[in-house]
Image (cartoon, rainbow, N blue to C red; front, top):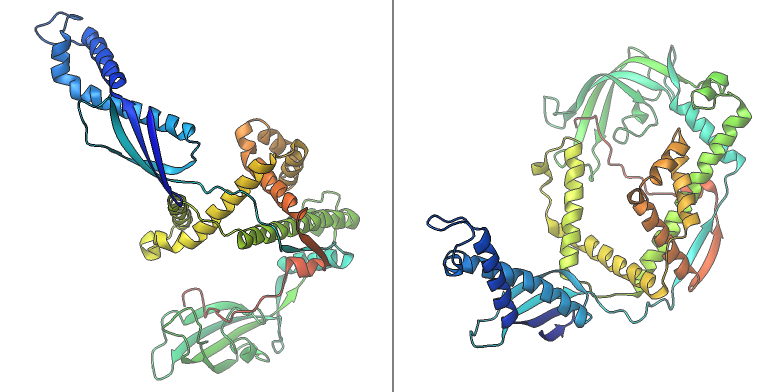
Length: 448
């Protein structure tokens, strides 16, 4: 087998010569075999002359043989030249010379980049540490009570934190008819919830049942509905009732409703602590991992095969479309283009190559005990953990995603051992609920 290779960056052109004698011998062998099995009128079974089979099926058989030998020769040539193809090759046969000893084809394909060394110099990583305090447990209990709160009608002025039952109708400046989606009846509004545009909820502080109010407001410039953004609006509002929040007591019934059968405060707090610590550990681990991977990309700007990027971008697009379909939304409205995902796909492919190279160069593998720990952590979120654990270990395929995640952790640990790491202590709240800029991109109602 003759092989010649030309490489330009990641683009490779490989010319392979398949011995003509081998092709001819395999074609003749198949024609003889076909002659024994064929049934053709005028000939006894098994007695069809090879020349007849040649006339009828010769070209078809030859193309089949060429296809199979081409695939086999390509794989052998790739191994011989120690190449790493990325994606499927484009194959073209050279113009055939019937007197030549070889039938040649040229395969064009991309290859993976060769990384001599992973660059880690200058990488600095911040490792955040935190613990769950008793005040964090108190805050979670308050949140759980808030989620289960009820409402009671009161005969007084409305305060922030109260809820109102209202009718409202919105009119854009200069228009007599209310705008589409700007009206509602018996609308339940919690004051201070920030659900409606600025000024709507604060404008109802101090109102009472059966009161009517007019609010002159302006939609934010960045409002999600372009037809309303930045426009002046008048809301005519009728208040039906003022309701006060009633929080449930943290008694045995309340505690049991969260699966703590004993109904005891101590067991309830212990269960909350376990959940918060699990959430904290997962959050810290995830953010540290993401930080390390981002730094790897930042310090290792490698070229990647276009074919892999395009494949990944297509997959990302299909994932979003599947999510839309599952929600019953119209894909025609989405109108996604693969190009929108190219940048993200490029980063994902680069990162995948870097991770794979670190694993290969350092012979990393996912330790069994860490796989078990991750399986148990996942199982702990279910009602019957042992059943979930048994499912994972019932089939090696079930563990593949866990193993991949653990292996990524091993890569992260390998990097952390070789870069500058500074520890920063923060509170549970700072980790779980970092400050973000509030966006006043709220809605008038569900239809606006």
